[in-house]
Length: 383
Ligand code: ES4
Ligand code: ZN
Image (cartoon, rainbow, N blue to C red; front, side, top):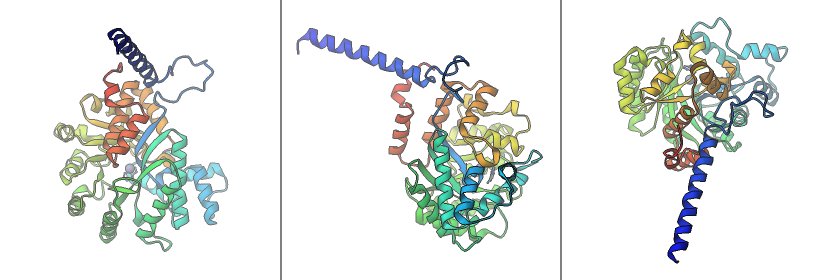
């Protein structure tokens, strides 16, 4: 090739790269969203329009529409005369005082997931619902021991949920929840045994968690079972620092949790904040849930942005979208309105979620590419 031609090619190449980077930067900043309210497009809900949900309870994600479909499928009669009443029964009451009250709301949705068909279809419907709201990857969690009221074993429940994820084209992995409680030790051990049996790197059960009443059954009760999970190489997250304080998070990290469900109360102990940061542990934060369970009383002091600014890896999630009456897009919008969360910060939240996801490096790379979050490109983009 003659030198001039090579120069022209090179110049053209550089020019093209600059154009590409500029175009991507504009797109990543929200494609001109949030400009004028009177523009033709429907009002945007948040800067980001595609999301990752790492903290999504199956039973907490049942909406009125989903409940009605599960009712019809299984010939169940829901205790509601109309949609309005059903909505009232499914969503958190205004006088919810604590996580313990909040947890009462799970009984109705759980009653719709006691057969293999009901559970499988619930997983499919929840996945389709979040997909329609812009979610591109979700980790759906559920406690197999809460699905055995009508004859299913825990293993039947896991198989049914696996069947459900096969029937959706949303990328979904499953997290099996142990439950905090008394007298259910054998049930938790069975969940752990099944987690070992069904654990895969992607496309099925990829981790475990523990859910339930943290204030009544402290994290310290679960040292042995998480030691066994660690020994077996099962990745885990632990609900902690929600109804209890920072000490619960410290213990969860000591047990080997790589992610913490909530962790919102770590501000109560600077040493625990330091630990979370140093260990690179990711917090699965869920603001509306924290408001409703009163984990945080003054939402104007919600610490998500503070944590991000201090270099703690934070993600934004729904927790129980049906019970809370929200979507993940609402949560992003809420943080924009309340704390001026920026497009750059939204990209950080999404990148943190991908980095911490319980899946393979290949899937993570493809999710980053889908969201335009490749590290190489990000160094070019304007924050
Ligand atoms: C929760 Cl199911 C469950 N367990 C623990 N904490 C929670 N917060 C909201 N749902
Ligand atoms: Zn949760």
